[in-house]
Length: 82
Image 1 (cartoon, rainbow, N blue to C red):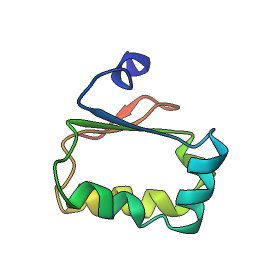
Image 2: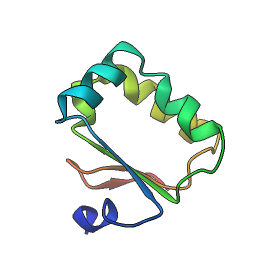
Image 3: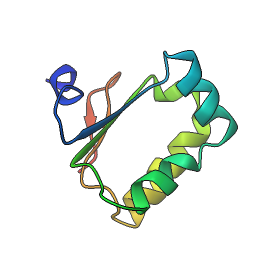
Image 4: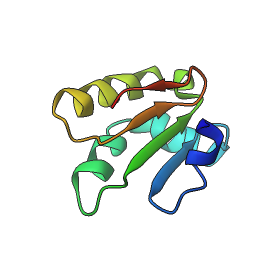
C-alpha cells in the first residue's frame, strides 16, 4: 500500500536514496518543516529511508506534535502516523 502513496498527485515523496535529496536534508533537515508549513501542504508525505537522516525524525515529531501533518509515512516500517 505505501508504494502507491508516492505516486499520488497530492503526496510529497522525499527519496533519500537519491544523492541530491539525501545531501539536501542531511545538511538542512529543517527544510522538511519549512516546506510543510509554508504554502499548500500535500495530503500525504512519504520519506523513503528516513533513518539515513536521523535529524529528520525530530522534524517529523515536531510536525506531528503541532498537527501540521495530515499523514506522515515511513515506507520502511509502514507506520501511518495520522
